Image (tube, rainbow, N blue to C red):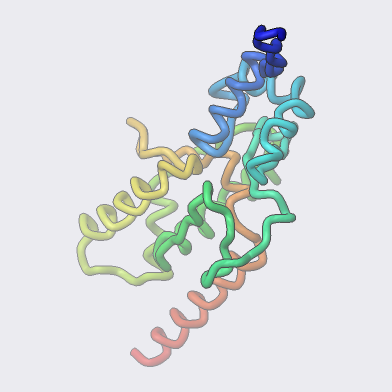
Length: 208
């Protein structure tokens, strides 16, 4: 009787570069060519293998080569089987407050104007903090204090920074709007949000 243990099949090893890209996507949700050119280049070169590694997780890599972005999305085949219409166990749906959503809409408008002026793929857009304040206060109203107005906006910018779409003001009081903003939200819904705020502002102005 042969008591020897049959050899086990060796599991194919995923190459290091694929692991690196997948881990980066799972950690942050996106990769920018500007900040991580090597990892982004690997995402471009190995997209088929990366998507094969992501497929069991019902996730998919989408590339925006012009803007230099690799973005992690939930596969379209994932069913919405939860009470909130959200069925993926690994991805937490980000819920923005109304003020955060308003700021996202304003940031996206600034970024699209930037792309119209200099072309898609030109990188981040630098916007003076005062320009953002003017737009934002126009929708939400003046608190009666310049310091409070600015702190309200800075707090929201700080809350949106982890999403990878905006930076805090630099020494020149300019805010960098990053290319990921172009993919963050549906443009139609953001435009509708701005329209509702404009209507509300006009109604308030007419009652004063």
